[in-house]
Image 1 (cartoon, rainbow, N blue to C red):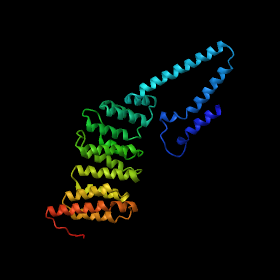
Image 2: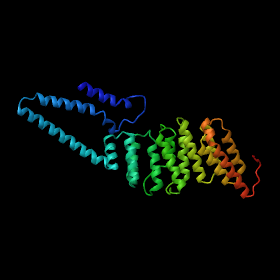
Image 3: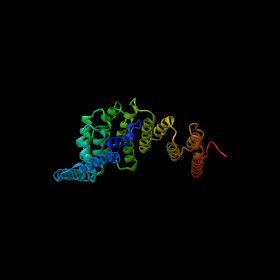
Image 4: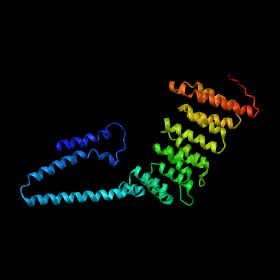
Length: 315
């Protein structure tokens, strides 16, 4: 029974013990593996009870079992209270793991959701001091500056300089995207678009940023230029993103921006470019035909409504 309990426990954690990069700190992943040790302990307790020949010894066993049950019940009650409050939950994690990036960032996020902006900024400022190589804490504080006035935030140029040399994290791109979204919705009052562009350029200056992360940063940069009404740098940023990876949404933005500026011939050129892009997979090529044809009809229709003669006519 003891061997079974150990084997069951180890087998239940095999999924986290492979090359698959799963998060380790999730208590619910212990529930099923713990059945093995619990079963072995139950069998052992039953065996001890059966071997006990005196009433006094059985009373000792019963007292120990009751005490263990009370301890487990108390721990369960404390854990249930902690898990029922998201802010308290991550606060406990952050207190227990002061050097954990995830715990400190998660606490700041919960404060942010709860509207406790000053506490979110303070949490991320402490984390930045403890882990100066992680620039995304400063970037998160800049995002707080969008929605909360009077909360101290770092200078955009300082955050940009840190992003240019810090490790590239997925959360960095997520924060940049949220920052751009605030400007697109018109809800960022405490920062200028130039500040968001500065930190985005800082991320792009990092020699470690490549692949999908570089694509995302260029996409965000294009959207920020579009917020400022700067069509040419917006389209150029999306073109640079397209060189890394073709994307239908990015192509649609380019066509939409050019058509809205009355550059119908240029918009049609992007439609043709997307239609002929050899990087599309076969299923994408078959699926996207309808989108390209629809965009072309919309551009040509807009040109006719505005009395603009197109240089190229396509049958």
